[in-house]
Length: 145
Image (cartoon, rainbow, N blue to C red; front, side, top):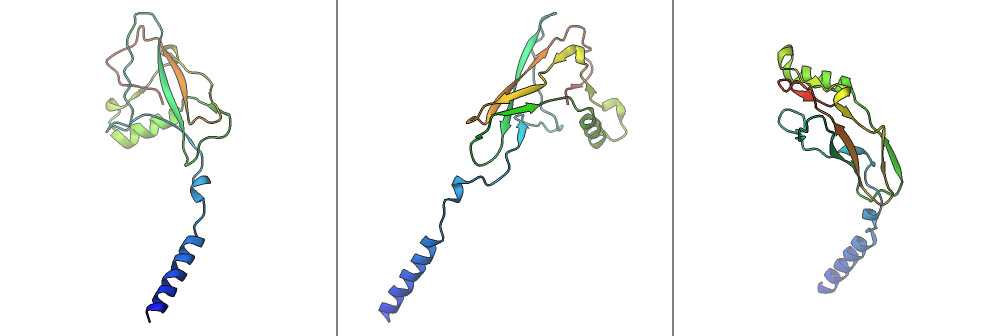
């Protein structure tokens, strides 16, 4: 009887070891691009830009490539402002209370590149957002969607 238990254990061990593969070496998910920004309770990521009278201030916004493996392609990510996102955020957050709505930052207060390059072998790229805040109304809640 003892011999049959040893044979059963050996057979089970053989089955477990033969079913293993190197699945962690293959991509388990899609590679998606996202902004690295912790969302606050209001659904937006707060950044703080130092105000310099009439001068440009640059904020470096990280972009990340998701997935379980390292990015193996040179990527050129096109970036743009999406006003529809702000409309959805405002309505979902405040419904008809338009006095609470966030306002979209005007293009004369910022400049973003049209594309950001992420090199092969890297999972992060930096997007330089240039802010020139001279003349901005500081009583409003400004958002760059």
